[in-house]
Length: 103
Image (cartoon, rainbow, N blue to C red; front, side, top):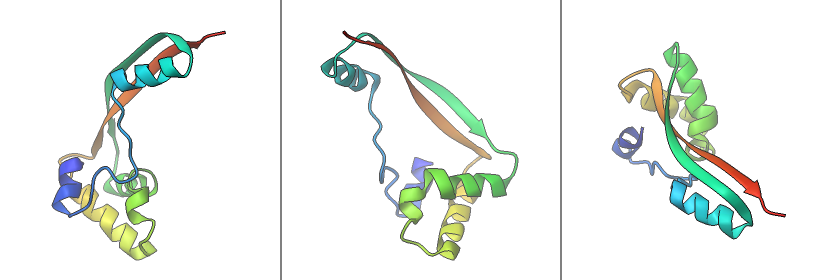
């Protein structure tokens, strides 16, 4: 997805923060949490049709990209992104956290 957005001249990180497990542990510790564990987990998310992928992209993933577009422009942009992906799938990587609030 990053490559596709870059090909289209869009910043793939618009409106996104991708904190590392290490940075997340630091933030949790600074906020008073203990017994902290943070890790990444790959979670490919498949879609059954191009249309469902386009809708998900437009309403969830590309929200910051399409908010200033007309409905027609947003649909066209989402279609273009979805059509360029190698599969009907998003390659999500989840950040998982387990921590205990001190006190």
